Length: 365
Image (tube, rainbow, N blue to C red; front, side, top):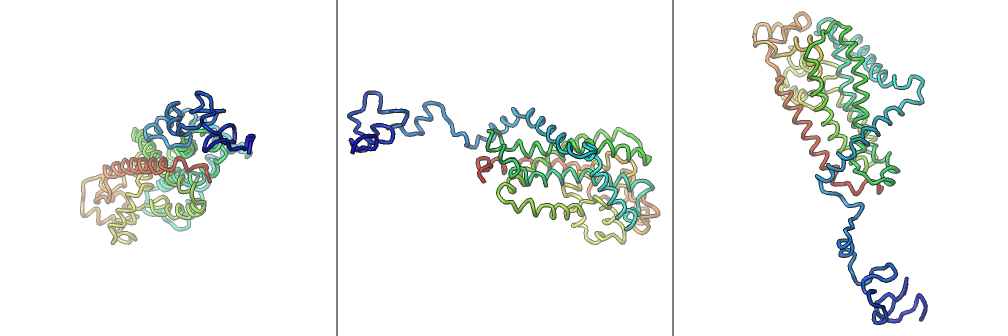
């Protein structure tokens, strides 16, 4: 046989798509001929020229550095998506505030007016108590739900550009943080309108939100990897998160359920403790303590323990809500801060490593 498809020798390329004898090749063609590798293994060729696989997973600290280098892109991406989210609605960005506010109004009507879970609260406290819980929990809820779909929804972007994939769930957490800050402007007006004073305790909101944001990033990275591999995750998560909403005291006081004589958790101290240290409950409680002076006044452990006054509260919580301050707390303020830091660090470290280990898989589905 001759031509491009001819065999002129065993195991050598005589031209593009053909085999030939090495003895017939000119000098210097032992390595490359017509742009094709001949004798040199690809790995050695790549090493000699400093080439690296474009889809290879970078080392962990290099990956972190790449994300930091793109921090301005992440913030810009989040801001642009946030602005574009409601551009087609007539009320525009106002929906960022109206959505959680309407949710809080529905919950206040059902739990505060119809079911009477506001009993035992000082006058005017239940509304800011409820709205704070709804806004803070909504931040974590939305971050997790959106992250479960982010890799699937961003496939065109992932396949078109090379960047650390963790930028995507991180960017969507920033979107939810921006929306929370707008909601807090309304929350502050509600709090002040119900007679709560402005105090220096409000500054504690900043470190609490920082811890909650770190937790949300870690949790979002975990569900983002799950969602990238299993579409069913985004279908199941709304039910799980909705169930979670009823455990951290968003709509009612876990303290009252745990300490009063008729409280559902009175005879289950271990369950009461676990409910109060779950991540959502920790961050909600810390922000309520920082924002609401009346909430601090009716928190167990605020005053030295007094058996008689504590028992009066246990039996008559509606008549004497402030006597709860004389009872032993289930979780102390210091304990809440330690749990808040612990949850943030644990979620961020586990979530980041878990997501990074599957970096090369994203965009291949």
